[in-house]
Image 1 (tube, rainbow, N blue to C red):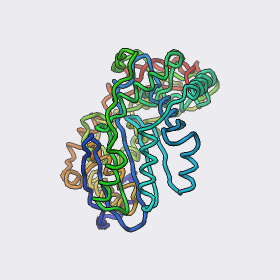
Image 2 (cartoon, rainbow, N blue to C red):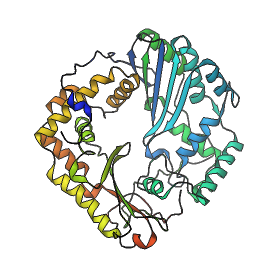
Image 3 (cartoon, rainbow, N blue to C red):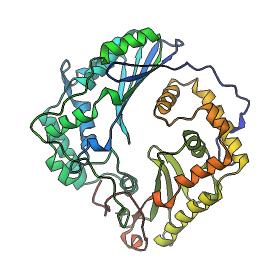
Length: 422
């Protein structure tokens, strides 16, 4: 099949025996998925915490990103600044955090003999941070400098402008108004155990896993909002502005880009098949398509002699042709074979097993039986839904004169960006 990875050439691969997921829920609402694997003396943990749009007030854009930066550098009730990094290094424990489109993620790797200590350090970071006002001011100054002197390239700023999620940077107005009390109120709203999912993998049995989680995260409780400040109104749903972001970059060539966010009702099996099929489809050339966390991203760069409007309409035309044409039965069968082969390899990679387990809990991971039952009509219906022009977030970057000819319409990406935001 055209455009698929080499995995599709191995239809005879037999699914490897994978750890059987076992699930349990703590009294505080924390959901845990346990994948037992004694092949190596290691324990891995991935904690995902969902954040909802109502957790961020309308006038506090960038609050989740600022909170993430502060949490990473905060002292805890038991550890001074820098102690956590030193202890992790001395014990050979890996702990890293990230802010994604839908929430926070913490990933932990430790030797099985250090699992209690490692989980205790994660609990310290999550449940017992002490926020220093001087650290808040330092981060505020750092963001202010980025707003005044953006370091990101025009292409990256375009990509940032196409989506409004938890990683959105603060604005000048929100930076001035955000206080330590706002951060504490955000933590009280968002850091709830009943929103969290913990994936455990490795050299520990089910009863051992239950004891480990209950001992370290069983005391995690929903917090009351701090007193002294009335509840803020949640951020409103994105409106439909007349134009999408235009990132001015004098002397640069024109780049046009479309983001198609994953629809909420997209079948997970169809999503995984389309992630294999769409990026390599030859009918999209010269448009480049990538499947990212935020959705499907289509990009087209134009030469110096090509007008911005021509590049723009070529991008939209390529997407619409694919949307109307869809895929064939042969392409579906090859993609399904590739998916099954890739799934068999997941048994060799603990991180892949954990990612799939989390996706299935979130309703985003395909499973074997529905995958085998996926029909061509259902696949193409999901494709048409995903690439619906009304759902596209549209934008462009490049020379200001070239941008004038691009009739960007129908974007839901948010306020226009004239090249001043990072």
